[in-house]
Amino acid sequence: MSTNYIQAQPHIDKIREALWDGIAYGRASLMVGSGFSLNARSEGLPHNTLPTWNDLMLQMIDELGIPDDDLVKLKTTTQSTLVALRIAQEYAAFHGRAQLDEFLINKVPDMQFHPGALHSQALALPWSDIFTTNWDTLLERTASQLLDYRYHLVLTTSDIARRRRPRIVKLHGTFPSNDPFIITEEDFRTYPQKFASFVNLVQQSIMENILCLVGFSGDDPNFLSWSGWVRDNLKEHRPRIYLCGVLNLRDGQIKMLEERGVIPIDLSTLFTNKPTFPGNKHEIALKWFFANLQAGQPPNLLNWPEPPDSHPVDFPEFPAIPPYSGKVPRKELVIPKE
Image (cartoon, rainbow, N blue to C red; front, side, top):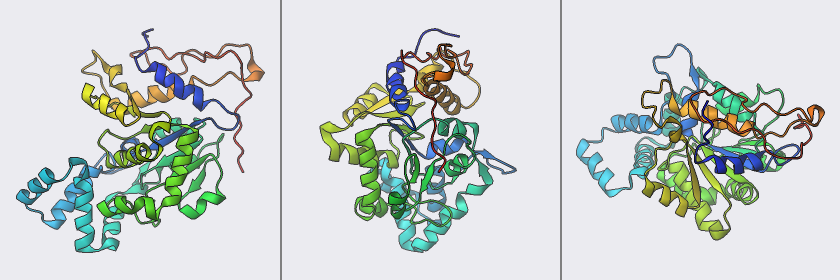
């Protein structure tokens, strides 16, 4: 195993420190995007992953019968990241909103997929809150299987006052019936007004905690919407926001993210000089990342001064995961189940 830590390790250390700074939960929140759902497991299906935004857009284009020339014109007159929202808006206008929601339910076979190991690994960490823009139910189904932690589910704005941390907050609706499913241009435009309570909840969490984003790309409409809102409203007071994953960013893209107050943790560097690395790089890199966060857990007082395992998960191809480096052990993590 390599002993050279990746360049992003100092940023990961900041997340580790915040994550484990608490008794019941830490000072770090997680926001989960659609890319994370690609780690789900399917059984007996002709396709191996849930459809992406691009997959849904292509199916809408086919149903709407949009000519290629019109599609080219749309792409040249609309920001590329907003094309999917515009297509969904046209679908809703032509077929009606109820038909759009039905389209999403039919095209995203939520219950035919099961949470993968990566879902369990992510939710085993003591996040203050978990926010998600995903409509699928993979996170809440994972949470129902946990023995040590109890996440409280927030499906609607009225749930906010009745659910305490740690929570799983479904920001953009959830299958099968908690709609609207936020997907159209108009949905995003009116979201801060129609769902002000959710916006305020995220704002409060961002002011109090480090925010870690996974399953997003730099041009994901959900990512652009939330990071833009934070930049516009919190300005210079915004805390650290980390975009984590196999990002493969150019220098210009990194600079653009930093100007938006987002620090990229690009795990593609794990695969430097490994062009033929087998398996799903996104999944493997996040497994290493979450294991890295887990390794920041202070040792249990009951086991002190026994040193913690310096390598909680074996990743022989990747840099070594540094063990817990603090000097004072903390009490055993206990999150109330009620």
